[in-house]
Image (tube, rainbow, N blue to C red; front, side):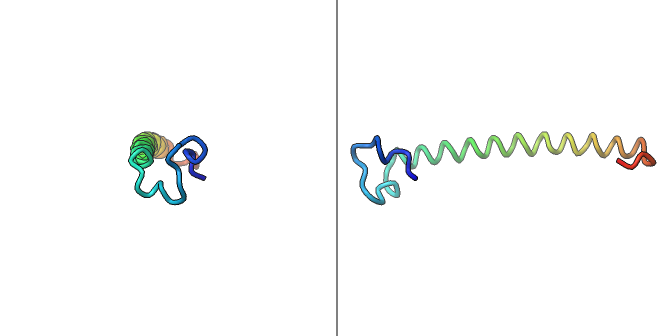
Length: 63
């Protein structure tokens, strides 16, 4: 579903492929997804490091 379908006065079937507003919206969403992915990757690596350190300190605990 294209969100601008009901609000854009210039809407026609398939117009999103060439629409500058649509391309800008998609670009902004792509950048936001990349920022979120970078955030998750960064904190996932930090958590992985902490878990690895805990396992190294207490190998018999069976984490």
